[in-house]
Length: 185
Length: 100
Ligand SMILES: [Zn+2]
Image (cartoon, rainbow over all chains, first blue to last red; front, side, top):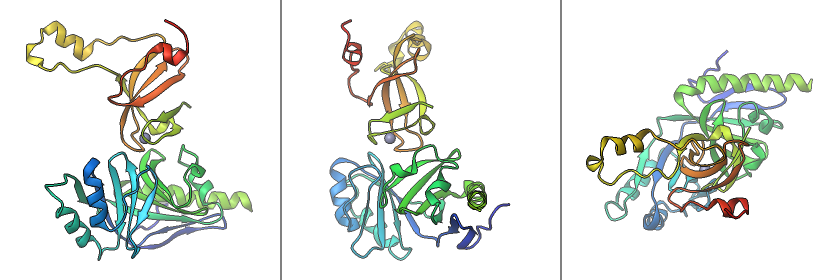
């Protein structure tokens, strides 16, 4: 059974873990390198993190950046903050070449939380969930699909999934929630 | 499953996150139209098909997204080294600790 992804809220819950659909947020794909990085950091109001997998937020907490690759970041922001972010980046062109693209419509985010949330991930993720420290994030693989995983705490994760893959992954994770709980019982 | 070290992420991760991308250090000719058919064929199609340590490209598809180079023994499947794209190819002697 595919969980209903039409509105934010809980999708599945068991003693092991809880799965829910997050409230939509603004998403920005940022590509830049070398001398363009420092001015972009200043314009965005955060220090674009240096090491792949690490994160940084603005002082107000309305924008968060995760480094995905050597010249690539993804930013999550409140919808209200997005126009300001895009304008701040655009003001740096053409002096500091970069690409900042609004990808808000591309993905949705599932929230996985509960005592066995990390174990739930092993259902479809080849890498060890514990190789991602709380407060970090990674782009990785889940049941054949590229996803971006944000580890918020030991027992809480966010997973960004492209829309077309979301029904499949949500259904798999919902099944996993029930299976883990059945094992416990 | 193979474990592969991504030189950009600096992490050793399951093979499933990666895609193999053929022989490494195959340089595209500067001026393709100056090539003879035989030379162009060699660039496009002829590969060394090494038995033993093989210089090859991999891509961290489900990760940082970057292409990098690796030396993998095609007999044992053991990775001798991985290094960023554009870096010079490490000598086999330096990887195996033997003199060639
Ligand atoms: Zn990588």
